[in-house]
Length: 167
Image (cartoon, rainbow, N blue to C red; front, side, top):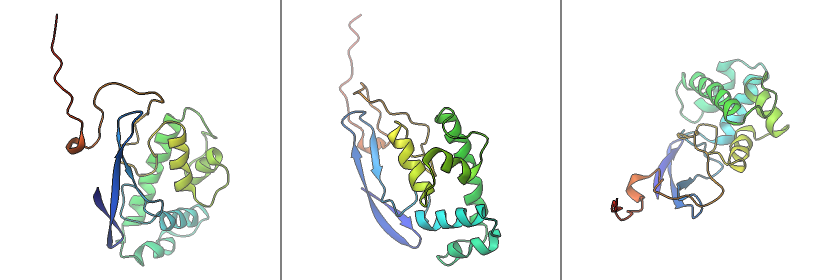
């Protein structure tokens, strides 16, 4: 278990090891955006407002109301734009690749009011880590058990016995 910030509060995050891929996964609640200290709904509301043409200053009010800095909305947009490019590469042409931002997410997941949540869930349904704001998005999980040690959390890694070279 570890703690992460959700705006000004600290929440506990449970880590579990998958029996299939032997990777340690953090079970982050859907209300908290992975890799950030902001809420998923607030980030989605901001990005939706920006996609609808609302100014960064006005759309960012929802984030500033929770104590985020003036520059945070711009960083959020840049990170999201990079996430979309990564998603296009990892998902191999799913959706309309000429689209950008939320338009691309909608082309992949359909019209949704929860685009960040949906694209993360979509990625996981297709054997990837969550795409939006996850620290390790470039993980492709195997459907079948794999050998070896692959924990992301070194402190919880299984200590396998050393292999003896018999050759």
